[in-house]
Image (cartoon, rainbow, N blue to C red):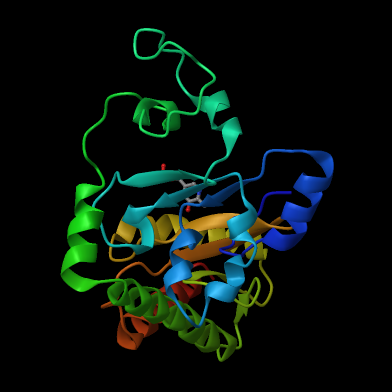
Length: 235
Ligand SMILES: *Cc1c(COP(=O)(O)O)cnc(C)c1O
């Protein structure tokens, strides 16, 4: 089952399973991979070092413009070749490892130097800026969850583990799914917040991802006020 709630899978358990059954173990760290930089949160991706391949989007929590993505293969993993383009004009032997032949380690062949933004940020600020960014965003996610819990007509889908929070308005009588669908629609039309939605075990939830480290409590309070205002218009 696939849930888009900003949770982290138990990577150790998946690694054990993949190893036991000889299955390729790929980690989608597009969003979550950046927690490696956070002392506080990196426990969430324990086991990631056992993956065969890993995706990290630098344009998610690592502050580059899109698109900037790395596919990282486990060092010395000979199965890398299974994904390399079949480009006989670039090499003689399709199956040899050739670490220097970068086309063998990528899904595309020629591409722009998208890593340049990441390289520049790392050189200028070091890893610490990622730690600060991830911790700030995750703390804000937790703060928002506390604010939702304090509202008696709102409900959290689950305790957030990240900067992604799923929640909904709980109307007294009307159907909660219908009311929240309306809220999502009206928020989008209003344009001051970009709130998406997701299904959690068959129920409709609003979903926010706090990506800007300058988002503050006041901004989140205003969002809650706006949701309540829209919900009351529905009555
Ligand atoms: C953003 C995201 C994707 C999609 O990546 P894009 O770079 O936006 O195409 C896939 N998986 C997860 C978990 C993501 O957060």
